[in-house]
Length: 73
Image (cartoon, rainbow, N blue to C red):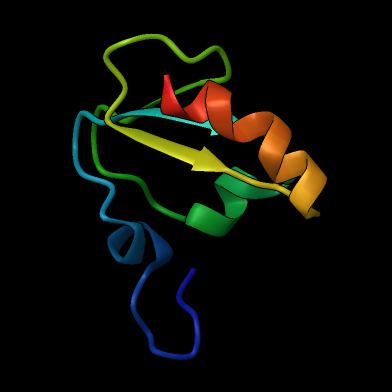
């Protein structure tokens, strides 16, 4: 799916083939929003090393403050 610029979200986010992506509180339609993925991309809800990319979603500052230490590990 491309936004107003026409650039696919995967490209905007810099997701590359083989990336391991850590997810923290993604929306239910997250994979649908990303669209076509490069080959070998994997997703983890439990963040473990190595992780190439962490995508954190927070609805408010309190949620961000709670999730950020987990994402930084």
